[in-house]
Image 1 (spheres, rainbow over the protein chains, first blue to last red):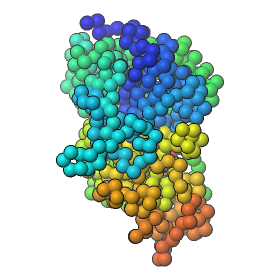
Image 2: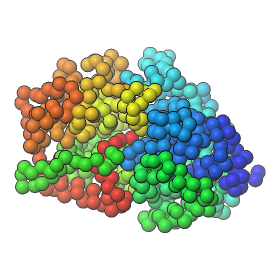
Image 3: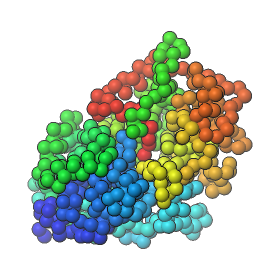
Length: 288
Length: 278
């Protein structure tokens, strides 16, 4: 029942070495603060699942927490490469990483199947692509009604889903607004779910745009971390720090520079650092 | 860094001065129609689609894979899911929904793709340079492209022309064009058209009837056949009646430059010439 905990308590209680963890948020609401806490607590051997690994998984892979990555697009959006991800795949640094690679449609369908309690997802995909030749988890089946060849992947069922949301109410119900990605599916597909939020309110307000509600009984732990999605963004609270995404290109390019940045900004920092990083980017058009 | 890749030298052919990148974006934008429903990738496709919306095709519906439908961004987004896209969208749906109902459901008329490599049958590689298990360069991967390539009514490919990118043989086939053999796409039972045009910074190419091999149908002003040959990794062919691509108008250039300027100011860095798509 004690849903509201500190970030340190949530990660220590619910994220274990060797777990399969899905930290979702499609460009929006990426749970950076939670990922940094996992790095600080020195988790090892994780299987990281995420459609778009983004800077967060670049940081986690570069710090050696992951032995496997399941993903569908691993770049710095609009900027270029994820250098730490590339270094791990191309040069096995800091440790070798196994990859299981899908398309976006496959990942989205796999989460959906996990949430729906199905063993697998079925969709029209991968036709003519080489991906099925390098990923044995991609199969094809025939539609029993029409005979059409369709792709199938196993349902995604992570041990833990971790997401960032705009708000929770005092009872622990969670509201996600704006670009909602696959967060609902990831939470409902997972055994445990940790949610970090911008704020805790008495009562959830009617949505201003697309909105997802996760009832309190679908969530294991909630942590208030204002700014916890920085340098991604929280719609209605602060904008995406695009300048930081551009700057990451140079920070991450070189191993030593990366390590120094992580030491100063992650290992020697705390969840409290996030509010000041994010809130100078307070959104002027949909202000809170 | 791809996004800061320089463009080719300035071209001066009419009273207007413009870059090869501007020519490419404008040529691509012109192919879009007011009634199109377009699945947009980041970088060059996003610039072309929004230029179309701000010029001749105000009614075009732009969909980004982050789930934003009917979005009208004032500045070009840096990522596929910038808040700008959601704030200006008619509606925003979940990512499973955008891939299942809208893309797989057959609601998209045009998909815009780009990549690190393309071959003469319009197949695209965004996965690895070199062998998959020991890559020389690990590229971002497929994103939505394998299904965009198959489920959209037709595909427009937009890429900067170079021998490294326009290859005889892909290192990895991420997203299907016509297949490794001319009729592979049809044999797989796929009913959508596939890639119908490639727009580059040198020329426009279209698939040749009978072979589905991409051949040059128009050259941008000032570009020679030799330049295209030098920058293409296969023995590129030209149609008999080759034309010159219509040059940018002052209006098109002004709208594109305003859009790029607003974008640079908004993001604090030059991201408008990005060549990648996710």
